[in-house]
Image (cartoon, rainbow, N blue to C red; front, side, top):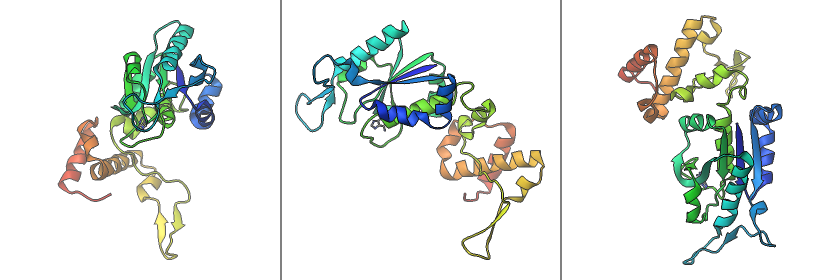
Length: 252
Ligand code: ADE
């Protein structure tokens, strides 16, 4: 899969993409992500990408023509239509499901908006607007990086162990269970307090461990994000645990 990100800050995208799991996947060629400088698609001497809003008011608005030219040029390069996403706080909320859907496309073209605005006529060429949350960023670059990261994780071979993406509790609509590593005991802030790893995780009993993790995931989801349970896909065991928890709740 290839993702083109059209931005006025290509360096911001490039730097961020060098690190971590996604950076390694790009190096290996498992996926391609290119930052495209919007100014390259201007035709004037000063490479102007924004202008004052008609009707007055503060801030600058991204001009339509450079964005249209960017879309045209990238589609011409690819020889096919691209799925065009505009980052915007007015967009559809990004979820794990949206990420999965986008990961099945051969090509994604992400236009980074500016908070002050993007000329409305650009929306004629946009397939969908995506928001990464109910808050305001100064530009779409961080949103584009978040979208690229979420999408990349669904591409086979990006995350080392394919299973871990499918098993991500969030992929199934639940919050994650707690994780621990060695040592099994550490001294707490209070010197006489020992912070211990739950006994069950040291037991080697895999059935018990699986059940404990399910219970912890469900307990957390119920306490912190009960809204997620409406769309979660729970197996029989999880449904049974949830019934117990609802009957006898505990905070987590
Ligand atoms: N641009 C500004 N804020 C944004 C947000 N929350 N999501 C996506 N793009 C944005």
